[in-house]
Image 1 (cartoon, rainbow, N blue to C red):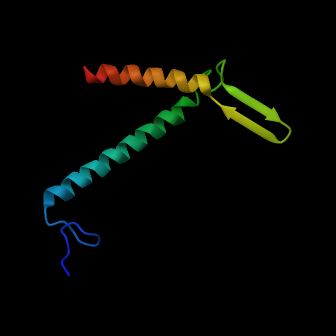
Image 2: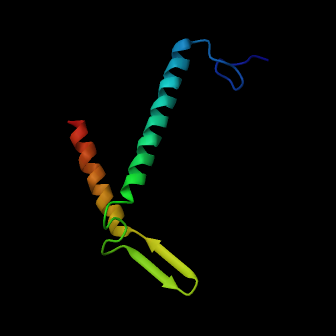
Length: 87
């Protein structure tokens, strides 16, 4: 039975693969930390999550909340920021 390179349970022989994987995991971790800090700080921004158009329904012991306007606004801001970084 032949085992293909990179098969499950085998280490790659190429150190460049391990180095690039390490860099990718480091960048992913930093991105997650940045996102966590952003979300933590977003709680203190006034009106985020309470804009007109955000859906909030309460019926007895059932509550449904969907921040529609907030999602659209954040999507526009993120799109503009990413468009600026592309240039």
